[in-house]
Length: 307
Image (cartoon, rainbow, N blue to C red; front, side, top):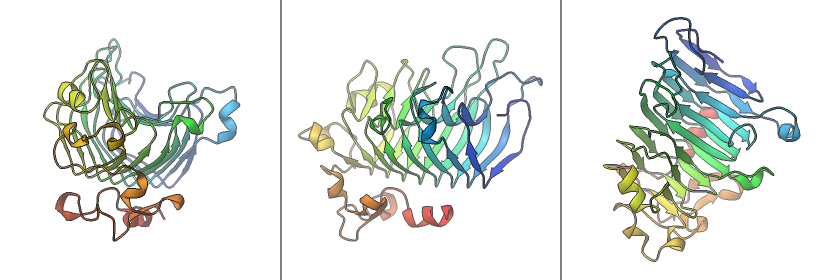
C-alpha cells in the first residue's frame, strides 16, 4: 500500500497475497501537499486470495485498487479469486477517493492490458471522481487485450453480481475497452449514481450479454442506457453473446456494426472447456473486428507474455 511517495514504482514478477487488499495506491492523505503516486508499473505478478480464506475471520476485499495514482501500467498479470466479503467482490478498482482537505486525489491515465482475471465475483469498478468527498477528476482508463472468465457470483457461496464493469458515482470519462474476451454471468455494465460518462469506447470485444447487457440505474437496458449514461459513445464490432435470447432483433438495441450469436458455441472458440479462446478458422466472426483482426483478446500474444 502506498500513498506518501512520488514514485516511480515497479512491482514485477511476484506472488502477491493479502486479505484486505493485495496492492493499493492512495486512500490516505499524503504528508506532501498535492502528491499523487506517479509512474507505476505492475507487471508479471500473480495476485491471489486462497479459497481456504473464504470462512476466515478476515475482511477480504479486492485484488488491486487505485484511489490516487497517475500514469499506471498493469500488464501481463494473473488476478485470481475474489469474493463478496468486506466489499462486493470486485477484482480491480480504479476509483478516485479524496476527503476533506485532500481534494487533489485522482486516478488518471491507467493502462490495463494482457492480463487474465478469473474466479471473481465481479471484474471492475471505475469512478474518476469521488462521489462522497472533494477530489480531483481523473479518467483515461484503457482496458485492452485481456481475458476475463469465471466472472460470476455463483462460484462463491457469498454470491455476487458477476458484472464486468460497474461505473459508480459521478461516472468515468474516456474509458476505452477493446479487444477483450469477457465471459461473465452478470451484466456488461452496471452504471449508478446518475453520473454521465463521456468518451466511452467499447469495441472489438467478445462478451456475454446476460440479462440486461449495458444497464444503468433508472434507465432501460442497452439502447436507453447508452443514450442516458454514455452519450457519444463508440460501441461497435463486438460479439455480444446471447442478446438474441433477450431480443428478437438485438441490432435495434445497439449501435450498428455489432454481432449477436445466440450462444458461446456459435462464437467458434477453439476449446472453451480448456479456456482456449482463440477463434477457429471457420468461425463466423474471424476477421470481423476493426482492421479485419479477430475480435477478443489475442490469445497467442497473451500466452507469450504470461509464460
